Image (tube, rainbow, N blue to C red):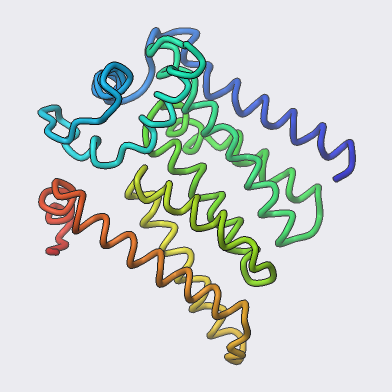
Length: 243
């Protein structure tokens, strides 16, 4: 990577962080369900575990605890108070999605200027800025999903990508269901579209992609239907899915 490209990406990342933290200049807390996130995180920091019996509005939150574990890690290891961690950590992580977006675009188009444009677009696009300015599981899920997509693109030509891909996708499974759903759609869609666009070759890269898609789908449905029972019993039926 050229020095000018690295400086440009750093500037985009700083701008991305700044705009997502800007609501805190006007509000003490910012985002939806902040009180519930605060309560779950405070309990995790105090007791060391997330209690699944939960009587708040977001009954599925304790079953997707990935965000809370990341926040609790900073609170415990860094000695940062819960309120500060809640306000800052996840929006900053969400802002850093410009990094994997840059790498993904650079891998596809092989032009740094277009990759910088893709990163800048993600940094400043209002729908993305608004949603990822919230300290919510969806914000961390967005970063994990984009990172998974980058690793999935690498998987065809580099088998070493499978280990980090499984680790990141596993983290996404326990963090945010909707981001995971869109990742599955993108992975399966990419395999199908490529198969329709080109004659089936059945090479090692293709087999790795299909194997990952299978593992991702099986792991997802096992978690949703076997462990996250409130998600299975309340959220899925509300969108006309009967497990």
